[in-house]
Length: 222
Image (tube, rainbow, N blue to C red):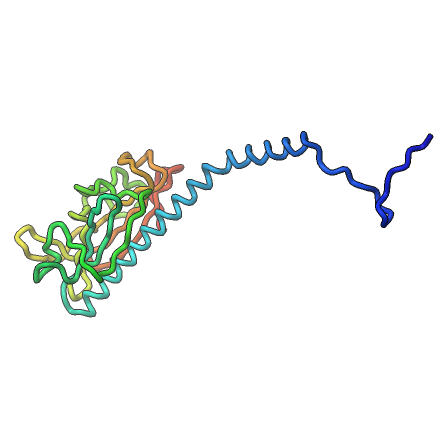
């Protein structure tokens, strides 16, 4: 006796669908793929957030330089620790006639600022230092020619050149490159971090960014 395959009214064979075992296999495969891809995805998101924050800090520094020339007065940026987050601010008013002399900088209402998300760390924020490794940076970017400014403060003259405090309350033209290092996670050991960005400001006011490549352990221009 020949068994006939049931047909729909349009004459096509009926489909039986998926069995429970087949669906479980598909779900298991999806879970495995997600488990493999998730760390890379999370790392990519963290890297994007770090780069975005670093570019925001860089843009604020460049805007501060522009404001110094536009207003024909000394202006500066600086880091303010709010506990749950950090703020990088452009200080043009402050509580004193010369806000760039304030230690620490004042977070004033209405002044531009960049908020630092919790997954980004200012490298040794209380006592800024240069990163321990300079591999891959251009010639002239090393421990002898760079300095991490107090409070990560970058000061510009009305001519747009970088300035530093001489220790007696006077601003003089910077002789070294100002450098700010941001890390992608709360770890002060640079070779072990997932990501790092170095923001540099030359004495003439040029701002350059470099990204730490964990695989090669070299800095590369952004």
